[in-house]
Amino acid sequence: MRKAPHIVIVGGGLVGSAVAWHLCHLLTTSAAITVIEPRTTLGAGLAYSSRDPAHRLNVPITRMSLLPDDPTHFQRWYATHHLIEHDPEAALADGRIFARRSDFGYYMQAQLAPLLATGQLSHRCTRAMGIAPRGTGYRLELEGGEALNADLVVLAMTHTPPTAPGRLAEILRDHPRFIADPWRPDALKTIRADDRVLLLGTGLTMADTLASLTRQGHRGSVTALSRRGRLPASQTTIEGDGWGDFSTAPATTALTLVERTRTAILDAQSHGRPWQHVFDALREQAPRVWGSLPLKEKRRFLRHLRPWWDSGRFRIAPQTQSITDQRREASTLDVLAARIVDASIDDEVIRLHISPRHCDQLIVREFDALVLNTGPGHERLFVDSPLLASLHRQGLGHPDECQLGIAVDNDSCVLDQTGHAQPRLRVAGPLARGRVGELMGVPQVTLHAQTVAMSIAQMINEKASQTSHLR
Picture 1: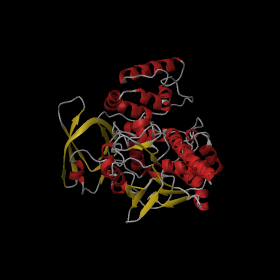
Picture 2: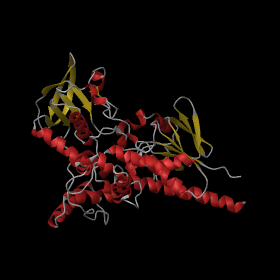
Picture 3: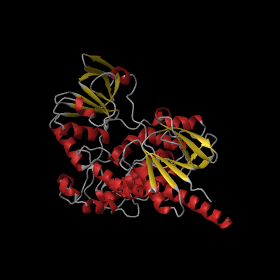
Picture 4: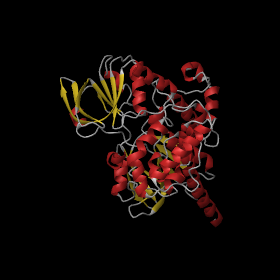
């Protein structure tokens, strides 16, 4: 009798749960599917497990769905469960709804619940700490000393948390109001109402942190600092699809891509369409656009253009934007383009020597609290993740050439250190960004998860069919 294959998915946030859901619906033969996730529930992950009502989806619910072929799936679930009655602030005057992130997490849990109840899917509430080849599959070492054998492994983890630059983490390590992980439950509770707060980073995480601080009654001064001081762009009120064709004869240099983007924005504006629609088109066509850039040009894009792409691509919910605007109008939020040169502590006062952008003169600022809001620690991925460090030691994988994640081929198979693809070791989600180019928004993430699941299901279904023909 043929033994059912065992598929292990490492990571039970949106990506890993989406892969699991699609596999359960695509496999035509029996298989055991296990998700390894240290959180007690599947589906929410870091992004959607926050219970802070100030944390909202950054796009309307019409653009959020587990199912790429059914973009209003979440919208219908949201309406069926009457969630707007419990969160009237989610609805805007123009009819758009920006739901709480926790509501999308509940939606994901609801989609997985029947699969867990029937045993089609199992959840191991632990962490994967190591990996090694075992026959044609792999052996995963789990936290606490247990092990799990798998015929196929899908790596669906998130990036590692950011780390403070230079000696800052060491200097502030024992400070009661140095918040290295703002997503930790009650992380901001140590910050007092009148504290002078530095938010290191000016992206979406900064905006969420500011919203949380404001909700808990903070009224002191806040400084948001990053190298370029760019805040997330606002959402457009004009509905519409992406504008511009970037995949036909795609650009082969970063400069050409910039020029084509500017041209598309001018063209869009002449037709009454906002620049945001051009960025939406770029996001949708990213695999073709990114794949056409030579490595040198990809690195040039990341070095010079990424801050502008990130601030335009990752746009802020209007409710969160309103809080940011109010704080700036009240002069309790200052945005600074600068870098930290040195730091010291004097009786819990954090004294920073700061070098402003385009200025040779250092300035000194004092703060009572510092919250780390910078982006994922791409460069430390294979250092801070025990599983990926093990992957690297075993020669099973390595960083991609742009240092965005794991090196994979076009089918998201992990490339070993000799460059050979491993069909039984896959990556789903953001850690495949180096190959795909854009894997952060829900539409792109869920589509990638579905694509990976379809490839795996096809391989397993064909193998089962061949085996049955031989009997």
